[in-house]
Image (cartoon, rainbow, N blue to C red):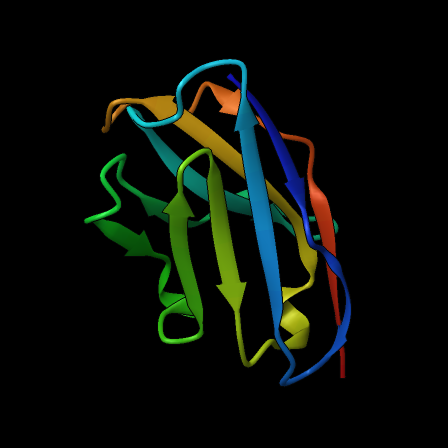
Length: 116
């Protein structure tokens, strides 16, 4: 499966952005999808994931209540509200077949910059 993320940009603190991750090359229905991010000078960190059915979601504590992960057909989304400067990072979407293993499929990142 190939993944393509989009939707990044420059936004002021308190603003919103929606990232999209389009999957192609294989049916996406059986894949868990996730978002990770990497800020300058820092390691990549997990942000959120959603199960193949869409019924289960998990978030890192720092984005709970502000970000929402969702999916529809072959596209995953990350709705980001109340953005903070510390959310500035390159955001990557990732996928794994099934659940509980490693994410073996990665898209190119999309840059999100939040100004104060």
